[in-house]
Amino acid sequence: NELNEQDLSGFENLTGLTPTVTVSTKNLGNKIEISVSDNGPGIPDAIKDKIFQPFFTTKPTGQGTGLGLSLSYDIVKAHGGDISLESQEGLGTTFHITLPI
Image 1 (tube, rainbow, N blue to C red):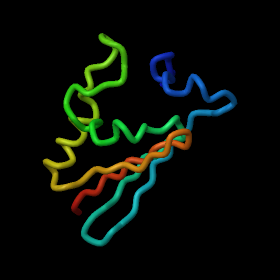
Image 2 (cartoon, helix red, strand yellow; image 1 turned 90 degrees about the vertical axis):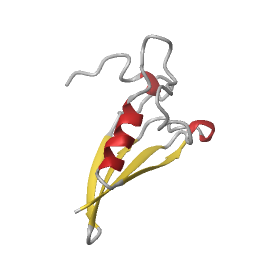
Image 3 (cartoon, rainbow, N blue to C red; image 1 turned 90 degrees about the horizontal axis):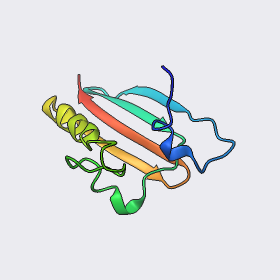
Image 4 (cartoon, helix red, strand yellow; image 1 turned 180 degrees about the vertical axis):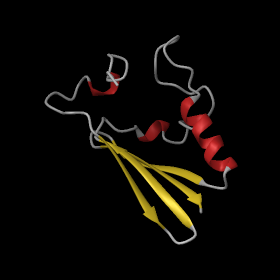
């Protein structure tokens, strides 16, 4: 898929960086963990506890509904799983999704 300007909005101040997304899985016995990592700007500590709330967005009005992570959270929970994140500003973010097998 072709990336557009909006897709790269968090990378504008990271010159010389190639955006990278890595997906990995881990068998935890009766669960599976899916990790999705990027090398983007990270998520500021001040908003980490808000990102799964419905309609929360950092995008300008009209450019995002703020439902993506909220819906993801609800879907994972509905399947008996959990979703969490690790993030450091300037280093990237990793989302961990754990689902029962």
